Length: 67
Image (tube, rainbow, N blue to C red):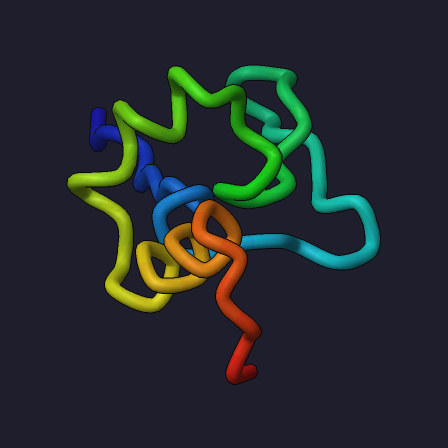
């Protein structure tokens, strides 16, 4: 049996509009990196996409968004 394909949206999406979605595998609501608990953000940060890291830094340090 093939293993299911898994994709961690929190590493690729900073904030998901429309409330995100509920993961069928875990039953947890997925809303993006911004909605993770601070401890989970720190654990995921090394693997996050560069633009997610940049948006997180802007949030932490109060820089104006360039999006």
